[in-house]
Length: 163
Figure (tube, rainbow, N blue to C red):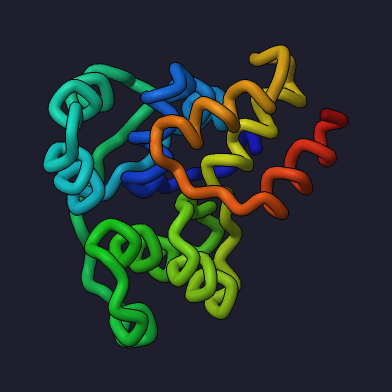
């Protein structure tokens, strides 16, 4: 992923911040991680969002991008503003990797052929690269912070990294 471009939605930014892993997403790529303006607005509107937004603004690993026109194929999914902008950017710039957790957004991305990664995927990469000693502890902290994860997803993810 080193030379690939990532574009991230609010959920991964919020949850990774809550478990001390916001820098993991930046370390995934040599390029700045794109954050659409709509995503930043969603982050700022949430609990603790002002601090997260300040950190994103002050981190050269992130680049805030203006919102772009949304293709009809994305609008038809009636997603949130952040997910919509992440997917719109992916339509305008093929090759971007979308980082989001929303099930409907992931289904839309799959139909559009957009590569994607979720918060748990970032945690698994962090474990594989040795940035964290155990993924299980981070997954448990994500759940404690309110992230819904199915038992099947957790089992598959942890098995994938030998835990």
